[in-house]
Amino acid sequence: MNYLSVENISKRFGDKELFSNISFGLSKGDKSALIARNGTGKTSLLRILANLEQPDSGNIAFRNNIRIGYLEQDPDFTGSLTISDYIFNVSDPVQLAIKDYEVAIESGDMDIISKAYAQMDALQAWDHESRAQQVLSKLGIDHLTQSFETLSGGQKKRIALSKILIDEPDLLILDEPTNHLDVDMIEWLEAWLSRQNVTLLLVTHDRYFLDRICTRIIEMDRGKIFTYEGNYEYFIEKKAEREMTEGAEISKAKNTYRSELEWVRRMPKARGTKSKSRLDQFEDIKEVAFRKTDNKDLTFNIKMSRIGGKILELKNIQKKYGEKVIIKSFDHTFKHGERIGIIGKNGIGKSTFLNIITGKEQADSGKINTGETIVFGYFTQESFSMHDDKRVIDVIKDIADIIPTAKGGHITASQLLTAFHFQPDTQYNKVGKLSGGEKRRLQLVRILMSNPNFLILDEPTNDLDILTLNALEEFLMSFTGCLLVVSHDRYFMDKLVEHLFVFEGEGVINMFNGTYNEYRDQKRLEEKNSSSNNASKPIEKPIAKVVEVNTDKRKLSFKEKHEFEQLAIQIEQLNKNKSTLEKNLSSGSNNHEDIIKWAAEIKEIQNVLDEKELRWLELSDLDE
Image (cartoon, rainbow, N blue to C red; front, side, top):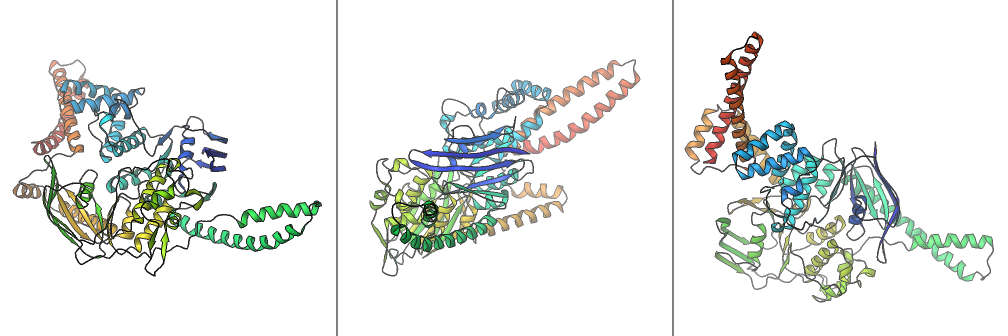
C-alpha cells in the first residue's frame, strides 16, 4: 500500500540549490533513512513532507486519510502551555480523559482522582493510558503540569517525541530522534520503532540505531537521490561501489574531454548538423569530467603539542547541588594517550564533571592538578557565538592559519575545512548562511585547529551528519593525546574509546575497562544471572535477606509510584462494587439466578482484591 509519492521536487535556499527534480516513494511498513551531509537540504525536505515548507516545483501525494507525525530537529515551544496541554489532544475525548487522569494523579486529590478514574473507565481508555505511561516513563517525562517556559531544549525534544509516539500516526517522519536521549532511551526507542506496523522516514547520525531499524537507505548526494534496499552496512558497501564506478567514469570523461577540446578549438564557427551533434556530446562529457566528488587525500598526521610527564590528576573531587550529589570522592590520574568515554543517564552530572576538569565550574572540595604542557580543546553542548557576517574561513584563521604535521609539512585552515566537508567554494560564505548542523561542524573544526593535546568532547555527534562523523573519527583515530568523550552514539564510542567512566547516580562514578558494547554485554549477563538466581529461590528468603541487609530502602520508581496510586483507586472501587453486591445479596431476590450470579461476582472481586492489596502493601513499604 503506497503511503507517499514524491515526484520531481526541487528546492533552492537563496542562490543555493538544495536538490533538483528528486523522486521517491514510501509504502506501508517501510522503514527508510534519509542520509546526506549537513546543509544539503535534509531538514528542508522533511519540512516539505510535513507541509511546513513548499517545494519550488514538483508534486507530493499522500494516501487519503493517513495521519502524519513529524518530529522537528529542534522543537521550539513558546508560551505558557504545560506538558500535558501539549502532549494530549483536547479534541480527542480519550486523550482528554487521559490528560485529566494524569493531572489528577499528580495532584494527589482523591476526589479528583476518583472522577478521572470513572471517566477513563467509561471511555475504556486504559489501553491508551498504559501506552502513554510507558512512553512518558521511558523518555523520562514527569511533572506534566510543568510549563514549557521552564524546560531545556533536550526536554522539549523528548516531549515532542513522546507526543508522536502516543498519538501513533500512520507515518512517522523523525529528524534526529536520538538527540538528547540517553542510551537506555535509545535502545527502548529502537525496540518501539522496530515493530512491524510502524512506517518510518528518519534522519539520524546514530549508525547502530539506523542499522538496526531501517531496511532502506535514501541518499541525497549533489542534489540527486540514490536508493539502497538494505540496512546501513549494505549502504556503505554499495555506496563505495557506486563511487568507484563514478570515479572511473570521470577519469574516462577527462581523457575524452581533452581530445574533444582540441577538436572544438580547431572547428570553424560555422558548424553543420553533425558538428552540432558532436558539440552537444562534448558538453555532456564536460559535465561528467568536471563533476565534483567527495574523495579527499588529506591524512590527519598532525604534530601535536608535547605532553609532559604530568597530565591531569583528580584527587577526592566532590560536587553537589543542594541535596543532589553529583560527584562523590572521585580520584583519577590520566595517562598519556588515554581514551575514555563517559556514560550515564541524562541530568546525572556528566557535563558538570567536564566543566570542573576545564575550570568552567568549581568543585566543592578536592584537588585538580593540571600539567603545564596541557592544552585543552573543549567541544561543549552550548551554542558557539559567531558573527553572522564573518566568513567561514576567517572563523578558523582567527585560531591559526596552519597546523604542523608530524612529517614536517602542514595542514592549512582551508584543507581542514575541506576535510570536514566545507568545500572551497563555500569557505568564503558568511556564517549567517550556515545551517545549525553546519555551525556545529564549524565549531568543531575551530577547536581542532587549536591543536589541543587533551581533547574533551561533550555530545559531539549531535547535529553532525554521518559523513562528518566519519571525518571526525578518522581525525580522532590518529590523535595521540588524551581523549575524553561524552556521547550517546554507541558506534562512535565503540570505535574510539578503550575505557569508560560510568555515572551510576548519587555521585558514584565507576571505571570499566572496555568498550561500550562490552559494558552492555556484561550488564545484560549480570541481569540475567540475577534474574535466574531470584527465580530459583523461594519467595520468603530473598524478602528476608533484603530486610536484613538493605537498611536504606530505595524509593518508588515513577512507574511504581503510578502503579501504587492506581492500586489505591482500584481497591476503593472494588470495595464499593463488593459492598453493592453484598447489599443486593442480603436484600434477597425472587430470581434464584441473580443470587448465584451475585455470589460468584463477590468471590471473583475478593480474589482480585486479595491480589491487589498484597501488591499495595509491597509498594507501601517502599513508599514510607
